[in-house]
Amino acid sequence: MYGMVNKAVEEMVISQFGDEVWEKIKAKAFVEEEVFISNETYPDDITYRLVEAASEELCLSADAVLEALGVHWILHTAREGYGDLLAASGKSLPEFLISLPSFHTRLTLMYPKLTPPVFNVTELKDNSLLLHYSSNRPGLSAFLIGILKGLGEMFDSKVSISIVKSREKGDDHELFQISW
Ligand code: HEM
Image (cartoon, rainbow, N blue to C red; front, side):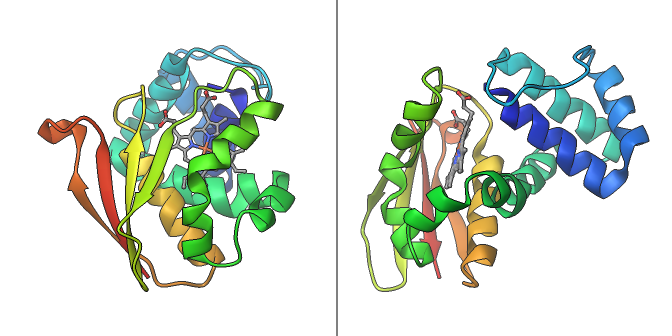
């Protein structure tokens, strides 16, 4: 994954728990990089190790760490670094979600080595939709849930999310019902 993801883990931990905790997490994860470079790619394993080590050090589940990362991703990483792209992708939560299928495709112009998730929207109604999420990577649903909560906060919408299908339960992709 691009370094910006590991950098977001670092920024989230430092802003909420401080430098010392971050150094412990890095040591526990056997990560030797002094800094992560946003537009360089790193093995996915580094990100998974950081999340696992953060989960142990902070006594939180890995899903709780991923969800907090997702919220941070929208409210800080994306807002501060990609404000124009966010603004151009919708003026409300449903507008944004409807444009999601092409969102990372646009990002691949800037980041050609991106291995993006694939999204699809079905059953669009006045205040709900179904979001299909497919990925080559396992175990990142909680990251997406955090992102959706962050988007809810950004658009000042009360969003509720329920998992309809998941790979853990034998389906071939994840399916979320989102209402606002
Ligand atoms: C400006 C905002 C965003 C940027 C710059 C961005 C960029 C990225 C990058 C770099 C990765 C790692 C993949 C790789 O490096 O190959 C990633 C993964 C991911 N992104 Fe985004 N993204 C943004 C917004 C979003 C939004 C709005 C959503 C969903 C609502 C989303 C969902 C995900 C998910 C679920 C992954 C995990 C990878 C996977 O499932 O395979 N991202 N994104």
